Image (cartoon, rainbow, N blue to C red; front, side, top):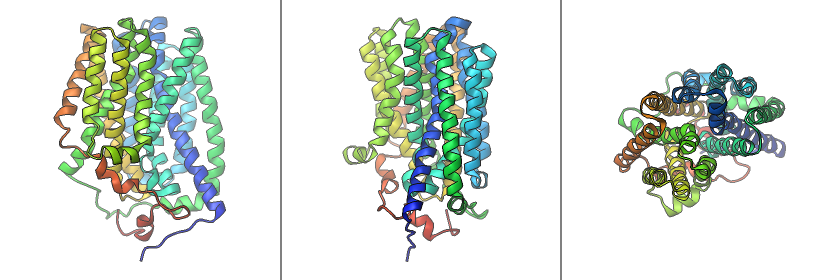
Length: 420
């Protein structure tokens, strides 16, 4: 018989508060990264940045992120997830202050520190969400990515439109650091109230526990995330500068914002997607979105390019989230954090290598040719694997909504210490 733990009113309130603050904290870590992208044309105008330096703003961020993610990709590493998440928020405040300075060296150093903060926060946030609300918290690193991307890209783009070249970076990153400080205060209180519950939920996985999957099964789960995350990274890093060079100012301002909005809409509407398109993998939408973006760029059509961003965002949201949920399905909180870190590390590693290559090639051929050619290549890759990768229906069990008052991860509670 499975054991169901029922929360008292005070415990339920604290668990919900933890979930909200942790989700918001992770979103703000991602927002800091995405807030840089609308500022890149501004930085380029003020500092004369080359395509390679622009790509390095992403690559250095990812290098620090991936190193940290791999270090955190062990269940034992997230036993102190609360302290780790708070540390990541302190680091992001330091990153904000450097990015607000708007010099080439401070931008690059700030990106390195921001990457380390994101790497620490990914596994910690994922583990704390599962500890607070169970299986419903499994997709936090997918949904938090998109929520943060919206907040960062939209807020930054708004301030770029309203303020001068010199004032925009300061307004963006001073404002973000203020939010981070408030989250540090709130998390410190809530994590203190739930320290015993979190300590039990985050107990390390036994050393003898087998890995979740192996061989081709694992590859099948990582491939869609790698493809869509590379596409969204290319779009995020280069689209504002690309459309600026093509003199498509509407696409430059709106495209990078509607991309994460479409991604978030698909992820938040996962139950509806399950009903309406259970066989969807996100690959066809990804490839179709890329085609429409490229056609829009060729004909200098802002409308077509924006439609392409919407389709690409839908593909990214479906592909990234579905693979992550299937990968982590049935994992305890500590294992959840480790797998989420490993998944993000793999996706960001390939994306960083591709973005760097585009920067190098762009120095020789021009940014437009390098970006468009690479997007076309990854659109073809998405089509080629569309019949092989996980479908939305494969994640169905992990999308179950549990009754109120019941610890959402009953399977884990009843098998505590026996398996992953």
